[in-house]
Image 1 (cartoon, rainbow, N blue to C red):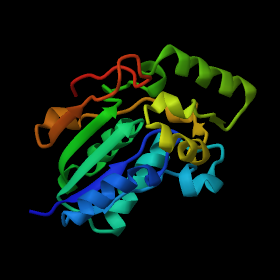
Image 2: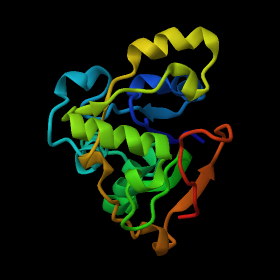
Image 3: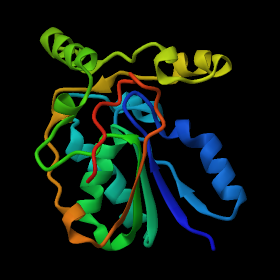
Image 4: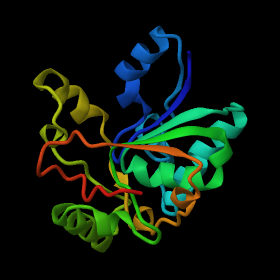
Amino acid sequence: MPHTFVLVHGAWHGGWCWRRVADRLRSAGHAVFTPTLTGLGERSHLLRAGIDLKTHIADVVNLMKWERLTDIVLCGHSYGGMVISGVAEQMPSAIRSIVFLDAFVPRDGESTQYLTSTAVQEGIRAALQRGDLGMPPPPAKAFGVNEADRAYLRRALRPRRDGRCARAAHRDFAGSGELKTALLAIADEGAAVGRLSKP
């Protein structure tokens, strides 16, 4: 039975990072959407002050509204877990299930700044002190990709918008019992994913 997938990337990435996954899902007959969040990927020319978690939630919510998507499998990777938490709160009736793939699973009021590793927290603080619009990406090796893909990743990654993107999540969908939720943690031990917890 074909399904509709909305795959939300993490920090520094864009919808491009889902290309191989999307190709496999489409070849199996599924519909797949891989939105790029404002200020990243092919939308990096839109990076500016004022972009925050609410902006990124709106990116996905508007995709779902304009494409008239229903009964979707909503998947977020890394920072995408923050985004899909907000999307699920705004559009629970459009979501069949929600998947956190090596993603932040925020409790109500938590931010990425609280959930992430100490190294990333320090990077966020340093970027804010310098007045940078975003925090530069870590080396491609940090993402655990194979050697052949690292050069491509180095070219494609973009600074992530910090400060305002570190704002706290507000979520109460998990208590509703309406959404099937899956937590998939495949990162190597020590990866900068932060704390994974049950929603």
